[in-house]
Image 1 (cartoon, rainbow, N blue to C red):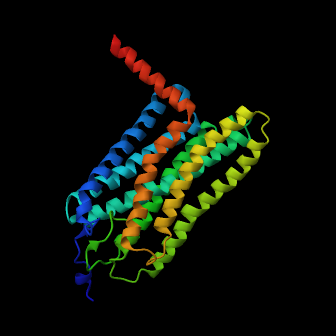
Image 2 (cartoon, rainbow, N blue to C red):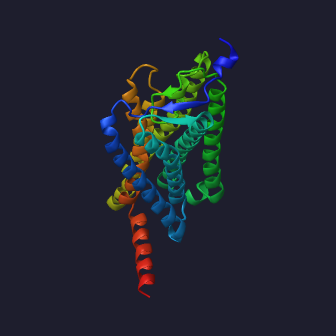
Image 3 (cartoon, rainbow, N blue to C red):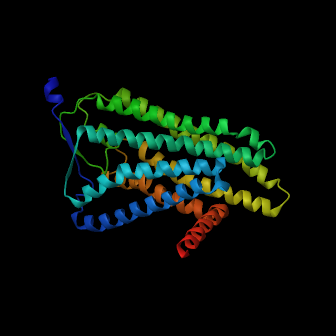
Length: 314
């Protein structure tokens, strides 16, 4: 096939849930609600941590970065998905599609590494409480945060550049809700075997290695908690770790199902549901998980709310 025929695709068509037109109105309302709640919940966490001086500790600053990632990835996926649900078929330009792919990879990779850094922070705080201020000082914290964002940036840049270099000669219909790598790769008019090996290996390293380190950290944390003489201390430590562990389970579980699934192992509809769980559900639940289980965050939120009420009364 000639090169000019292979590069003929200048836009893609996102099919979304077009096979179920009777459900699209309902889905639009549900996803719009989820999107707004996600933005509000994460924005509250970002603002509260920013304004409350007592929360300027590594644990909460990591959480603030996590909320920024959740807001960002929701903003990358949800508006386009809502457009898809409001139309039978929605076209997206070649450039816009790969821009969306880049940011999904960028923010998704950043979240992987941030969750790993948060586990290390909890490990240092619980297993080495006396030396924690030295272990997790400002310089170490900045290195972990900067490293997480940098690795996410590198992941998005390398993978998106590689996929966009493939020729696309049609069909141009992406049977998915967004321009995620596996869905777009199916339309490439070239041998993608080498990239698939790289992508699978990279995904194992990016998802499974941090996940295994998190598991090992929590095994050490569990033993340290069980050795604590105080019941109140054990309960506080368990409560602190439970929020992060719940978030880790949701994120890594849904991400693994999305990016480590066999190429033809699931139907397109199942893949869309897995992608929704990974890209939407965890972003919505993270603020609820952390705010409901964290007494200091709740106290700071109440304190800021009362301060606002007091200012409004004068």
